[in-house]
Length: 311
Image 1 (tube, rainbow, N blue to C red):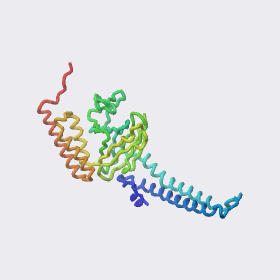
Image 2: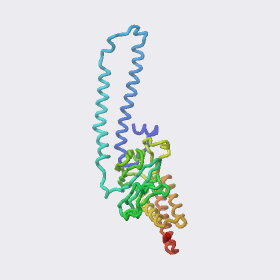
Image 3: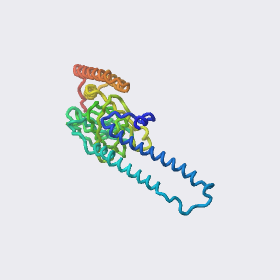
Image 4: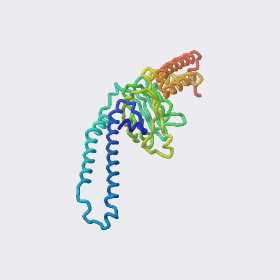
C-alpha cells in the first residue's frame, strides 16, 4: 500500500520515526479503500435491488438480514485494532519517549505571522533570555533576545525560516509562538505539531538523509498564511558544525564588507544541499568557516572591531 501511495504523491520519509508512522498511514488507507469499495458496491446493489420497476410498492418491513450490522461491527473492530495496536503506541513514543537533552540537538522555533524564527543556544548550550518587550522587527530582533544577557551572547539566530540540522542525530524542537496558533510541519520528517501562545511544546525526530525540504504551517493563521513557509537543511555532522560556527563568527564580525565572501559561500552550501550533494555542501561549509575566520582576523588587524562612543 505504501508503494502505491508514493506513486500518487505520498512523500518519502527521511526520519527514523517515518516507518512507524507510515505503517499507521498504510493501514488507515487500507481501511479507507475497503470502505470505499464496500460501500460503493453496496450503493450500486441498492440502486438495482430496490429500483421502482422491481418494487412498485414500498415494503414497510424492508431488509430483514443483518449483513449491514455485521459489516459495521467489523469496521468498528478494525478501527479499534488500528488505534490500540498501531496508533496509540506510535503516538506514545512520539510524546512520552522524548530523548535526553544531552543526547540531542535542542533548537527553539518561534512562529509569527508569517515566518518561522529559529534560535540556537550556541557553544554554551544555554539559551539566552528572551523578553517580549524586546521584540523589535525593525531591528531584526524577532524573538526579543536580550543580547545583554550573558547566556545570549553566543546564541545564533539564522535567517528567518531556515532550520539547520545534523543528520543521524536526535533533534528536539521546542515550539512556541509570539502571536496566534501555528502548526509546524515537515512532511518528509513526519513531523507536525501545533505551536500554542504561552506554551513551549517539544517535538522530536531523527533525520536520516541530508538535503533541503520545505517547512509548512499546517494551521490557518491569517490572511497571508500561504506565505508562512521555511526550509529545513540537513547537513553532515561536520558540515553542520562548520555552518553554525560560520554563522557565529559572522555575528561576531558584524560587518558585511568583511564577511561577504563567507556569506556568499554559505548560500552555495544550501544550493548543494538542495541538489543532494552533501559532501560538496560540507566542503563549502568548511571553506565558509575559513573565510569567516580570515575576515575576523583581518578586522582585528585593521582595528575596526571597536564600538562608536555615544556622546
